[in-house]
Length: 101
Image 1 (cartoon, rainbow, N blue to C red):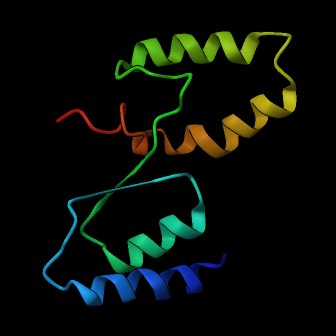
Image 2 (image 1 turned 90 degrees about the vertical axis):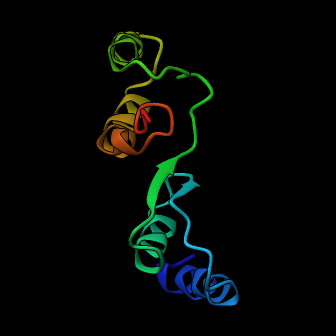
């Protein structure tokens, strides 16, 4: 879906409940969804769902896990590249690492 379509429906939900202003919204890493949420709820913090295999709120422990994954010869280079370009740049949004309080 495009950002425009998602924005339409998120605004429709927002307009049906104008008193609801979410402080935090949880989503996956779909860029169209994130953009629509930023447009519709600019004051909300947007966090990404927890990765099942990276369950830590400790940034040092996360990087230890990442080092193991990215240097493991059994992990395809395409997977490492995908994670490096799509997920690491939004590390601050990860629900367990991106929020501390």
